[in-house]
Image (cartoon, rainbow, N blue to C red):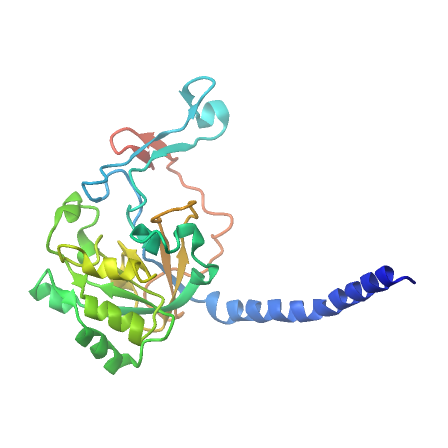
Length: 302
């Protein structure tokens, strides 16, 4: 047997020997799913993107329309073509619930498609400033608020995601939200503490900006130091302040300076909110109200 053949045989034997180890690793993660994730409660922390949601005036509104067949210049229809599709004129990648990569402000740092896959799932911390905001709608979260949370719950986990609950999003999708100059935010000192002292992955907030300073000093510091952030987060009143994970999803736009994101909290099985893995996940249930295009809303509705 020549050296090449012998090397090929050895390589095959090593690959074959590795199969049990691979199966062991796979079954280990499957066991985690069966033991914890199958019975967990899932809470969506994401706004639905629609043409009428709040957006900064500098970007302007977006528009949805039925996708057009270029051969006929007519919209695809269920009756004629067996399917329908949608054309999106999105005014910006800073729309709705978002994930801001540092390239949003700093081109020397990663864009949305350059973020690592390890962003997928992290411990979730929810710090509420609701009581402070009731007294002062423009309240900016301070280090003291973080320390108060830690007195109750222990030290914030390294690599976690910290979402700040203010209930600002309770009136979403009121377009006036995008025009408010006074809104709940985060101080620069608090952001520095979370990243430099607690070494979190990122923070997130309900409003569409980080703070109310004239030059958005918090967002500027984050982006120019290689950090990401979440904006437009929703339904933080439906998750506990500790004990959950957050799953993070977003499209990989080439060179994207922002991203439409979906955040889903994965909470313990005895949590009072959320949905569980169920028999109706696949196939999905059939509705007695077919989806159809609505000219008034500029979207498909039931």
